[in-house]
Image 1 (cartoon, rainbow, N blue to C red):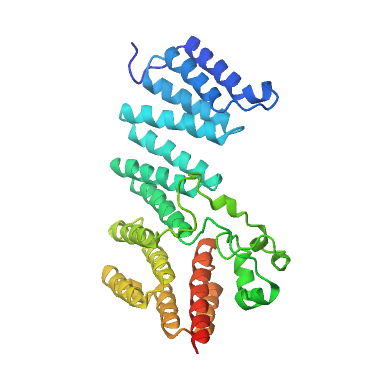
Image 2 (image 1 turned 135 degrees about the vertical axis):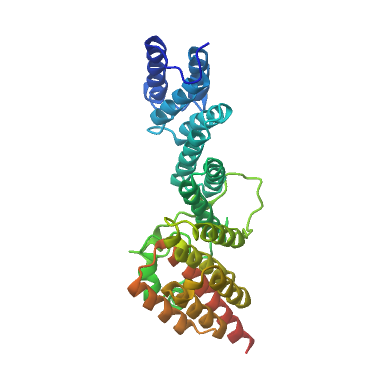
Length: 344
């Protein structure tokens, strides 16, 4: 039997290349009929016996995945999973991590963030085992991002709002924020008042879990996980000359997740901890932004909260993810104010 890193002979290459091309075009050859996974099983039975090593077989599955990306993300993922397993068996953890990350990206494109988290976490662990810190951090950031994004997404659509209610909840400034690609906050895809913004184009089914056995109408508490990841990345980046400049960004992300939890004491404690972690952080715009937001939440001052966000955004443009979290924090502040008005 050939060694792990042996070069496959021309006959072997021709065999599995032809079979891959046939397999990737099976749906087209059958007039668009879906085989429900039969293509992948056919590839399994075709590739593995023909190749002389697990390394060759893994590469064949990668090639198959490239073909399937054109027609079926599900089948592409299945082939990449086989490649990951084979690369792991032969100790090629860097390659396994690379294709784990690719699976996570495919799930991200499918808006299946639950599964994306699983594979980005696995990829981060594999990269870390190979001491590829930068790539590991990229995957961890994806996990934190999706964890925070999934925190308040309900599996049931929100109630329809009439125009008067929309005027109360959605301001012109919030509409501007929403147009940056925010798809995870307070959306109503039916109401005409949202035309021209992303609020009117959200398909809430994108955020449903494929597992029908999971309980409905349940919020997923994942802000703490996101906070932990961002703080860990910041802490490990301080002693790295290439990564230390991103520390303030990681601490900002962690702080925004804390803000969304609405616990003023926890926010204050976090800011103190961040100063101890990085003494230079207290002099940054990111620290002042978090401190001012915390003060606005403590005082339950919505106008001040909005002004603080606008001022920061005018100097450092907020991305869609940060905008989503800020809108959530502001909405919680509004809800608290309305609740107090009802009590009085």
